[in-house]
Image 1: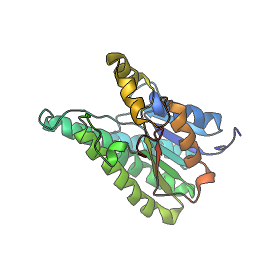
Image 2: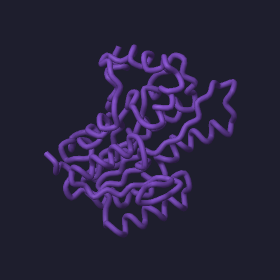
Image 3: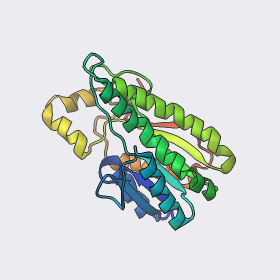
Length: 237
């Protein structure tokens, strides 16, 4: 099947690289009209933590297409540091880069998502949304992703009267340009990741994109308020 999203209008943030780029490419291959957003290298350049800029962008997209059927909030930013080392500025920047960057686009897109009648919002949680990972200085990231998980459940409730669904994907370790730097910097890092995986290989962006495609399609019309762990079983034991 190469037409699972035919006729669907999708906005993908953080689409210039990594998981967002993989999702945008797969959506196109499945027939969707895809509008990409990132700081650079996308159809639209925007700072999605800036309220006015985000509102103007989605007003333009909505006016041009009349509706938005799918919103993928893949854009994110986080500072990783232990609590004793993390500054308040870094904490605030991480919460903006994990929470504001989901809230502002979703709020701006909401009227156009309601106009769809069958819209799907896809957000990104993490294993950190539920528990701490040993050896990971992810205090602010844990708070941010926990907030995304809770926010998405609320969005599912608020959107239900309009046929609007909201779900999260919680990826495991995915090979991207960003994570490749971690692999290169620490020769033992890959083995550490794989030791936690039931399936002994690293994920690719397309592994996340397949789940996103299903959530974006009408195949998942009865699914909302759910979280999908795409992590090779790392959090299942």
